[in-house]
Amino acid sequence: MTSKKEINSQWKHYGWEEKFAGVLQKPVTLSEIECLKNSRDKTSVWKLTLNSGSETVPVILKIFQQPLKENHLVEMNMYRKAYPVFQEMMPKMIWLESDVKNGEFWLFTECLEPVRGQIKLRPYHLERMIPTVAKFHALTFKNRLSDKQATLFDSWLPRYESKELTAERIQHIEKTKEYLDLAMQDPDLRKVVEPAYDIIKVILGKGPIFFPEVIEAGQCLIHGDLHIHNICCQDTSDEHNWPVQLIDWESAKYAPCWYDLVVLVELLIDFRGDWQKKEDDIRSRCVDIYNKEMAKYGIVFKEDPVKLLKMNYLQRVLEKRLLNHLRRVLNGEKSLLLKRYLEKIVVWGKELNLY
Image (cartoon, rainbow, N blue to C red; front, side, top):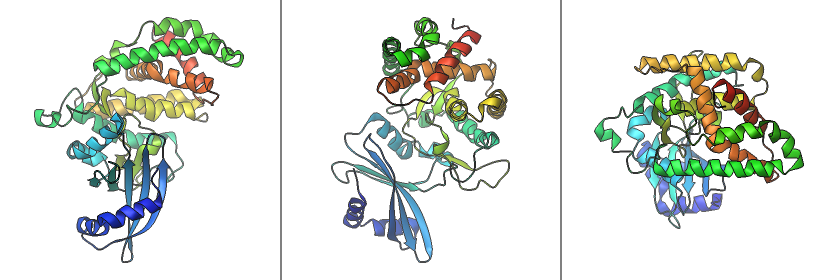
């Protein structure tokens, strides 16, 4: 992976100090390099601190190594092509340098302050983020874009109902059945899986779309990985509204709009045991705010919004997430979500007439 030494070397080789000076309209020098993320999928994220006199300018550098994956291209195209549509919700792109070394792409963007670390997260903080999510969704809801804008996305944006993603869901569901059987052969895992095993096997036979309502409720461009680490706000002091922007766009796709609420709200509840005593209230409050915000843009859901959230949650879990966590546990890793997934499939599956 890339090192600080390599970044310094390329900085000098390409004369980026002069380029930044031109973009920022002031002379700068590179003073600090901090690695924020070095992932296994051949991307790394760095924070560069530039000095301009007594002022410091933080910049984010994201490096994509070859061979590029589809999600890498998606994120780069969000900045290269879709940025004019969503610039209010995204960091400013400074520039994208292609073919740096061995064909790498180096993306320089504005450095934003993640919400995580600024505050001690409480359920009411979600209410300050949801209006921006609704505004973001409304821009592309049911292909609201103009023909000219729509062409920006045609060649690169993954679509939930495409043949490729449909085939992937079918494959994941078949694999889930296999992994359920493997889990039943493990003495310890069997205790966890057995109470839900027969029910889930019946439910999986109804896929790959377990709820047509998920599609009928409407699709739009979603972030796809809308957890709290990917939400930024430069000023969290406002008690009512936050100027929210989103980072890490690798999972963006045209998909059911409620998927983002599943990650932002429901998965956070899953991880937060201290929230689960009031989860019905938290869920209802967040869903009500999203529903009302979408209505401001003329978007009205026919189904009960809480029911839609639950449907989208189960659809997302059954089509891929359950498989991921079964595989993780069978590989000897820990899963904080497997037991919760199994319980909610049984309880919500019955509530929503899946069995």
